[in-house]
Image 1 (tube, rainbow over the protein chains, first blue to last red):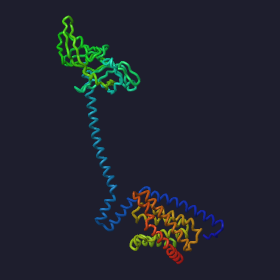
Image 2 (image 1 turned 90 degrees about the horizontal axis):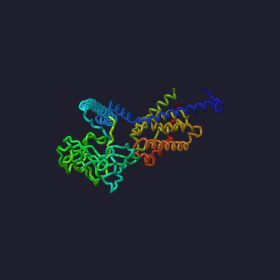
Image 3 (image 1 turned 60 degrees about the vertical axis):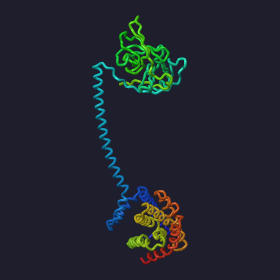
Image 4 (image 1 turned 120 degrees about the horizontal axis):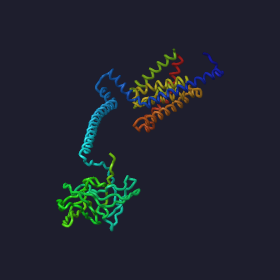
Length: 288
Length: 161
């Protein structure tokens, strides 16, 4: 087509051409950038080497091909490893599911048996560790205050125990009687206002332990003919509403036999470390 | 038809010259960038579309033959073709000084742009200084001085074609 230079048609033609030029430019740029961004370099290298190998096969080229596919091969290897791991985890999962099923069956059996035998079930508890923040010297065996309170899920009548390093067990210390937002007051079993139902371990002798504001407990209402002697261990009895049955309390140090009464009285030394007590454990029973 | 044959011959001839002969007849790695000169020539003589399409095609071929980041040369040659085409009415391409200046700036843009892309998309940080390094700059100078010769040859070919 013949178009005169300088005419209106020529300007229109030039404008049209320039517009197409711009559009093509943008398209080509996008194409080029997509090549760069999507990293076509390595696949292209591989294709080039493969073509070269098909034309002129030699060991060096083959080696180069293997080196080039390193990432690809690594990815395949990783996929296989992940799959193997997945299979192993599935097996483990199956085993754990079976164990859980067994546990459920055992738990049910335990539940049935405990009902049948009227056996006290072991309570599930959550332990809260607290530091003793206040302990008055003139009320050393009566009270102390811990740094955990309502915020930590504590409430009144919760049992407080501590770890006895000598025999490696938890032993009873007292119970919470006042709860505040971030602190609680604990009355100790050695307090004169505290009475704890206990029993002599392995002898089925139920009696009461009373505190008298010292490191000793007075064990009362021991049947007269009961075989109790110094060295016997005292544990919490099933009658206690605060502690679980069997928590160690103390050890008998002296037994007094007064013939004028029907009961014997003993003195027991508490298990908890009297002087160094600085941390207590509060056992919060959980719903089944 | 003549145009198509011209472009096919140009493509094959340039590829042979740049990628085959360039490998063997360079002096310490210094060899003129004939493809860049041709793209500038096409931009100045034929306009935007021809220059940018040819630039893109030559760029892709260059990327296939090189081991650098694929697509960088295609983008840079497209940009150079586009800008050469944009200014083709403002300059007289037959003047040697114009050829020198435009090819010089095109080479600078190419070197800077390509090195910037390599700097961003590869782990080799030496690209930042490779442009300033001696072979890169000497290559630009050689390309600039080769431009009038290439322009003359292409003009002749077009006149006879």
